[in-house]
Amino acid sequence: MKLDIHVPRFTWPGAPASIGTTLASLAQSAESIGVRALSVMDHWFQMEQAWPADEPMLEGYTTLGFVAGKTERLQLRLLVGGVTYRFPGLLAKTVTTLDVVSGGRAELGIGAAWYEREHRGLGVPFPPVAERFERLEEALQICLQMWSDNNGPYQGKHYHLAETLCSPAPVSSPRPRILVGGSGERKTLRLVAKYADACNLFGDASVVARKLDVLRRHCDDVRRDPATIEVTAFSNLPDDADVGAVMNEAEALSAVGVNTVIARSTGPDPIRWLEQRWAPVVPRLAGIGA
Image (cartoon, rainbow, N blue to C red):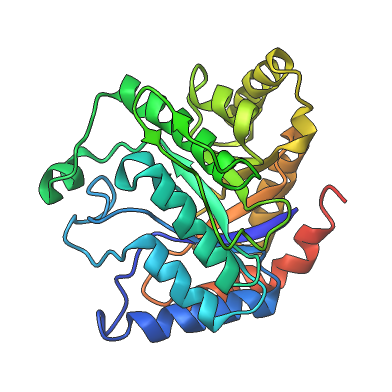
């Protein structure tokens, strides 16, 4: 079992002036204890379901570029990018740039987007959900084409590219890994089966097990081995959970097919949280599912 960390909140003492130094220290601490990947959200406003919308929120790829310059081994991704936020050709170019400057550590995390308030607030079109999923599939196809030897045109329902030139090519071989976020059974998990190297699921072990059954059926439909898809899932434990609870949750998730557990940093002292809560269990997590 691998450990990733996710940073959905930058409401730290001294913010905004402290955000850069705190984030750099958090990323470096994560790398030092053996965390595999660091992710941030792709939002312009904080998620109002969880915290006030006017809390500090950073643009995702700028943030990952900063983290890349402060670390050497961490994989870097958005969890997850909204398809509506960037034209797909520019998205592929952005991820490629991050991959090149980080030495091959970029991943493409992408989903259908959902936060209407920030779209309306900043004047970004927010099409209906069915169209967003159509755009998501076309964006995945465009990124894959741009990361291939095919520099020709792309003609879709929503996107039309005269040429898909991407130079320099990504450093990652054969290309940056793709994670499709969300657990919708009819559309999202079908896109995971068709295009993704990884998925991200919510819920306890029983919920994740049910979603993975659906994913396996989609994999059967497209003749894909589901074992080739990394399964990530968030830890659902409170910040004060002890080591025993952490290990029990990880073992339960592993038993239903999860490869990577993702810990969320939401408190005012993320470095202390990481070093006290997660550093002691990283070696033990590595033994789960080995």
